[in-house]
Length: 428
Ligand SMILES: Cc1ncc(COP(=O)(O)O)c(C=O)c1O
Image (cartoon, rainbow, N blue to C red; front, side, top):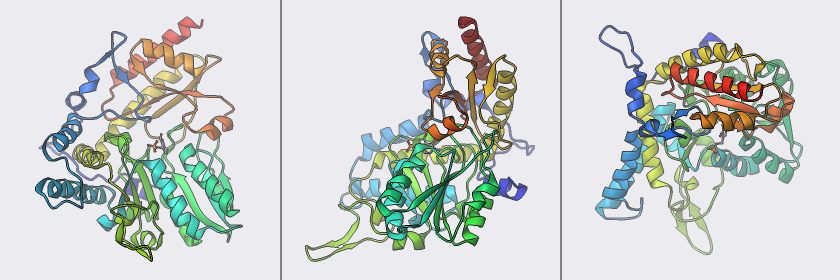
């Protein structure tokens, strides 16, 4: 990643500074915001290191949702009564919060979805079905989550288009020259992850987007694992679409965001038909609303949107640049400590990484690692992480993956390392 790109991607939104201009990351105070971190599992203090799967929720998110249901639960956009007005205002305010969070040009470019998976499927089924024809090509990479592979396979199968795959090197980095070599005059779309969930690799997407645009190719960025760890500016990146999941950024499950450039959204056909996405309906002809409403058919996840707004505000208040610095320290510390363990192999050693420690331990199956760690209170993920092509690339069935969040500490990394030592003792 170039310095310019790095700066763009890590732009701080809300630098919280002390009087001496020196920010102090008070992780102990932050931890108090998360009620679940006081829980014990198997009688041991919870060490939650499965943040790439889903993050825990701060009290402000829980209380915001609670307040919605307790005080102004109502359907939106339709009612003329006060509760509906309040719910509509709160829902639409989050669109503006999200616009600012991503630095989108207009809040109309923010579409609420169920999550990253739905965002990608939406683009595949609308923009994709309209623009991709037989013989066209779509490029993805080896390190994609299944949700950024399968929707394109479905589209390619339907259209007779071709899916091309950019390879990665032994460190888990994209091989840029080979990616660039895949572009032809048939290429319509590049759909690529910003940060890999299985490896932690941070891709140089600004450079890649520029390269694609120079060839007239649109770019979708899967930001599920990026937004919790680094500041994203969709205008600086100039991506065409950017997708994310609320639950991975300390918000509720079942809610996410699709950002799209307005001109593209405006030309896209609707995704689902139903209430709230229409301007008028007759049996002769139905007219659709403009974006974003055209893509939000039916009663949406109102509580989820409102909770997501609280999560984005929470993260912004701490500041992504501070979160990134804290997690980077943990990543470096954890990498060093884990790699001191005999037989441990770190899968994914990219120069630019975020929040993921994926490893194997000789012949010990990652599921056994995960189970033994769990008995010691350490929650990690073991498996293929919905990224089977990554596992195939490294010729392994699975990894054990510890993934970091803004509330993790060096002491928790020590607990992880101690627990992995225990695994080694058990299998000695
Ligand atoms: C990189 C990446 N993309 C997409 C997804 C899918 O997210 P969701 O299941 O929230 O739709 C995930 C989830 O782990 C992910 O890590």
